[in-house]
Image (cartoon, rainbow, N blue to C red; front, side, top):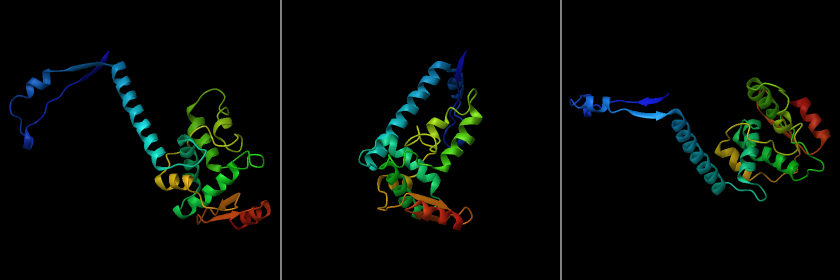
Length: 193
């Protein structure tokens, strides 16, 4: 069993010139495996090209391109406004740079990713991916991105604001983000939010 591709090309202006029968009978027979391999090769080339382009444009010392993309995906999901992305990025960078005190990034969108996008699509032990993606349970960055980050999030991951913040929370109605340096400040912000 294979995939058969056939067709004809109309003449300019949409009129046929009487030779379409030659194209219609000239069929190309491709095995399904060939189609899959071609698609996989094309996708691989696109992904490698995208990673290379991102790595050329966005860099942060000590991070691989993949790590930068993963961090940018967290920023994309946490900050609804571009103006907040660099400060949110600073919180994550501050935590990543202090693993003794901050082994977990504690990013709520990673829980949503596991619950909404992974668990409904897998069988067996549905909690096994928490150890890889839920940043309340996995140390450091999750195993992969939780979304496709945009250029603003990538730029924020590569160039975070300079801050002493280790916490943030958002008002769900307004999207306003409150930042804090200490647990006490954060708890007060949670009341405001």
